[in-house]
Image 1 (cartoon, helix red, strand yellow):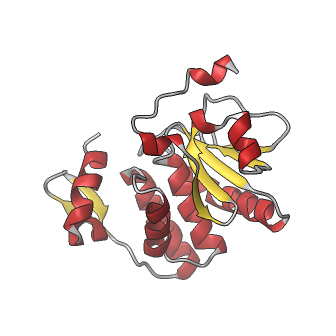
Image 2 (cartoon, helix red, strand yellow; image 1 turned 90 degrees about the vertical axis):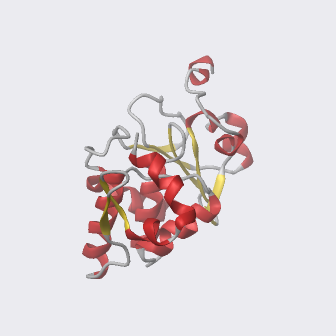
Length: 191
């Protein structure tokens, strides 16, 4: 149990809980993967989107061995993770997905699942996930891959990546359209 304490790096209280995205699908941070929480939420399946956090025994586990880096090819895992979540839910299980903080990697994978198995557009999947966990922030590289995945799934896009002078980077177009999003995403871009 002590090995889990080393992963307690949550910066705010919101990171310290399970966020229910849809019925029986939760998103959280690594330090919340405790026996008490796994029992409380009746978790049967765990997706661990880290390279370092140990897998839990006695659960169906899937490791997505990636860093939170815009250079990582997270899209190579979209179908596998989406199908793992879908299979877990279809058999009556409860699924939790986590990375270190429950902000970038895990939220990206949840959004990919919602697009593939709930037939949601990227914008709708992002909005739903953000409404349940307001501080999600897929990094720019991950967002670009979500845009490509939406095009692959639906042959069209609801989100485009556009150039932002202030951040000297491409950002999702809706970030610039809604000023309330800008500060939030700008912080992500400037990491």
